[in-house]
Length: 151
Image (cartoon, rainbow, N blue to C red; front, side, top):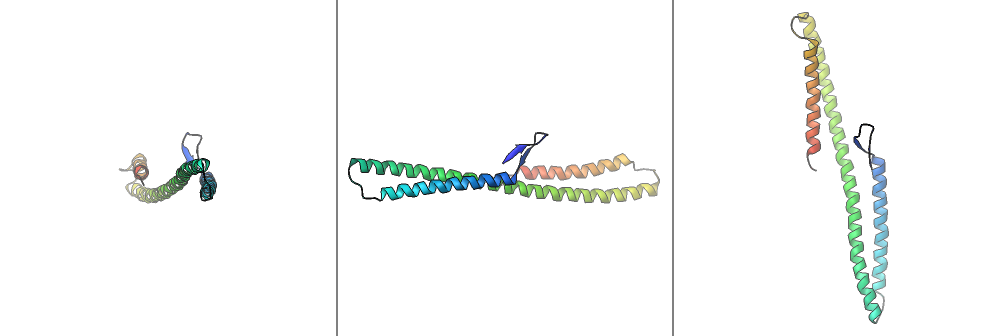
């Protein structure tokens, strides 16, 4: 589901996550079939010590299968929620970057007009670059705080 890119960052592959979820659900279905087979065996008409031992073991196995099914379903749900969480974060980051670009473009336009009007009498390009860089950092800091919030 996740892999490291060339810079060591972890990236989630949605298609791989979907395959993992599908495999977990298929495994849960197989366990459910096994549980049903055990239930049908227990409902049979058996007598004697062997029958009671089989039924006791069947109940034990049925409980263990139920725990395994629950863990598989929990894992699939966790993967799905994780993918959705990062999909929402990606959208938030995209909007923040777009807003920062729009703000930067308007600052560049107003900064260039002010620089032309004053003909170099006050505002340097480095000050303008600092303001633009600051707005990008603000957007990234907002995204960082969103990423740290638990869902």
